[in-house]
Image 1 (cartoon, helix red, strand yellow):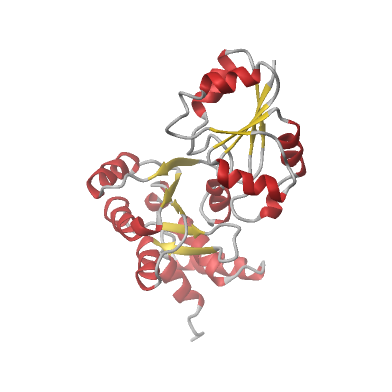
Image 2: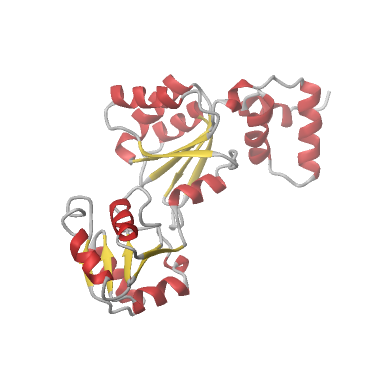
Length: 275
């Protein structure tokens, strides 16, 4: 009985490919790939010559039997175009079928765009809700957002560049002007994080054309509901953060989550001249 390996691949920077991932791809009997053309380029770069078969959204059910048959004779590696397979791409049905057939399913961990964006967002990471791509139509998007509007968890979405501005407008309309981070081109040359309130991020990309794939990380409802600190409390915490060597932008974003003050207000206090 073979093992189905879920092999994470780079989301941009090829140096993120782990030695274990390369070895697993070399030793597998077959690689099931979301896009064989894309994966073949990756395999060529790492000198891997394992046979490929396609496994994507529109053939995933038809290909189940063939992949399970290969598993009966040896190990199979599943890869997506980028990142961790099974997260926002085909994979669930194959994992479920492999387990039901008695095969071992083993992850080979590595890059994941939602986790990378969340970790560097400056927003709480102890509890989060990953929701994939937002709906395409504004009406459907607003209904979708309304369903999670009162969730206390940090919210994580994917979005495309041509829908970004409309999505940000709907997020502000339904969720309010919360703190958020928009991450694009993660691990690539032009990697960028834009952090601030939704209105600030919307303003930035209104004046700078959105390019690349985006991960949007939005503060949960709890960040909006706490009691507002007094200015004295805020100033004391700012002083402590500055003493610890924090940067003004990072401090203002972090304290805005906790204090009930906006990032802009905090930044203004930090730059106020002594009387």
